[in-house]
Image (spheres, rainbow, N blue to C red):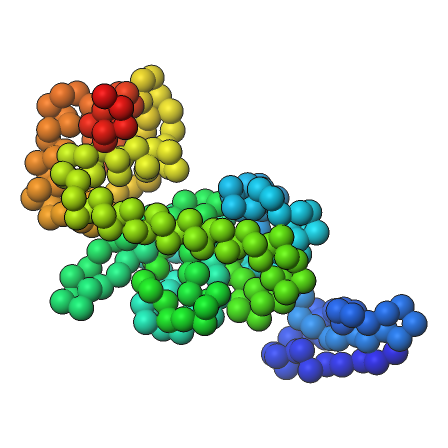
Length: 272
C-alpha cells in the first residue's frame, strides 16, 4: 500500500479534517492512497437534478452523469460578483445550479452588451473546450450557486465517456447556431419583434405562469433589457410603452408581468 500527502495544498488544515482516498486506477491488491482535504459539498440533490435535466444531457448514460456530478466544484456567488473575465484564458466550464448569471461583452468601440442571461440548468464558459480566451465576462445577476468543471477534469471525462464527449459537441454546435441566430435577428428584426421574443425567452426560462401570461421572477432593469435586445434605453422604453398600451405588459412590483402570452407570440412573429 502506497501513501501520499502531495494532494494536501493547505498545511494548516487540522489533521482530523483530512481524509485518505484511494487513487483512481489503483487496485485492491496494491492500493494507493492520497491524503486530501475533504471535498466541498456538492450541489444539493435538487440542484443536481436541475443541472442533469439539461436537454443536451438527454442521451448521456448514468455512468457519465455520475462522473460529471462527482467532478463538479460548487460555489456560492453573490449578486454582482464577477465569475469570468472577457479575454482571460478559460480554465473551467460552468453550470448554473440556482439563480442566474449575466453574460456581458465589450465591443472594440467600448460598447457593453448583455449577451445572455444563463438560467438554472444551463452552462457557460465553453472556451475551455478549445483552450481559448473567454469570449465574454460573467457576473451573478442574483445570488446564485454555480458549479465549475475544470479543464483537466473535462478532458478526463470526455476521454473516458464517449457519450458525454458527443453530447458536448452537439451542445457547442447548438450554442454557435443560437449565437448566429441572435446576431442576425439583432441586425434585421424590428425592435418590437426582438423585445417580444426576449420576453418570451425570459418567461420560458425564468417565468412563473399566471392567468393567460406569466411573471418573470427575476429583477431586471431597463438597462438590462436594453442590452439584451441590443437597443438604447430610450427606444426600449418606447417599446415597453407600446406593450403596456395594448395591455400585454405590466411592470408592477419591479417585475415583468406578461398578461397575454398569445398576443406576445404574435408580436414576436411566431404565428400569424
